[in-house]
Length: 232
Image (tube, rainbow, N blue to C red; front, side, top):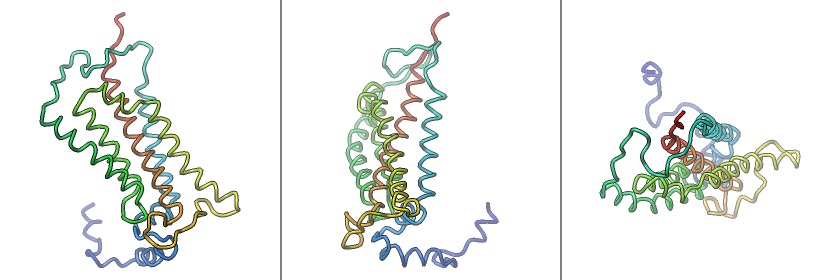
C-alpha cells in the first residue's frame, strides 16, 4: 500500500485522459455540472447498479442470518437484553439528537435529489437520512425507532429503490438501445433541477434504497438484542 501510494502523481498533476474527457463531456452530453454524479449515474451507471445491489444483498444477508429463530421469543419492546443493563439516555445526547434529526433528513434529501448539481447523490444522501433515524434511537428508545421506521415499510422502500434502478436501465432495451441509455429530456440548461435526464431519477431511487437498507440492517441488529431463548 505504501509503495502504491508513493507512486501516485502529485495533487493537480493527473496524467490520465479519463478525467479530462469526462469533464469535457459531462455538461454537453449529460447537462450535469456535478461531474462525479455524471460518472456514477451515466458514464459508469452499470457499475453503480452493481454497487447498489451489493448493499441490497448485505441487508438481505443480515436479515437472513438474524432471522427470528423458532427457539426464540421477543422480549417486551425495551432497550434491555437479557443480562445486559443499558443506561438511560443522557440529556446531552437527547438534545443533540433532537437538534440534528431534522437537518440531517433535509440535507440528505437535498443531496439525493440534487445529484445533477453537485458531487453528491443517493449514496451520500441515503446514509444521512438513515443516520437521522439512528438519532431517533439514540435520543429515545427502540420502540420509538421502530414506530418511525417500520420494517415492512423499509423493506418496500428498499425493494422499490433497487428495482427502479434496474427498471430504468431496462427501459432502454425496449427501444433497442444499450442498457441504461438515457431516454429522458436533458433539460434546457445544465445544472438545473430538471436537467441531466435519468441522473436525478436514478440518484433519487438509490438514496431511497441506501437509506432503507441501512435502517433495516440496524433494526435487525437491535431486534436481535431483544431476543431471549425460551426456557426449555
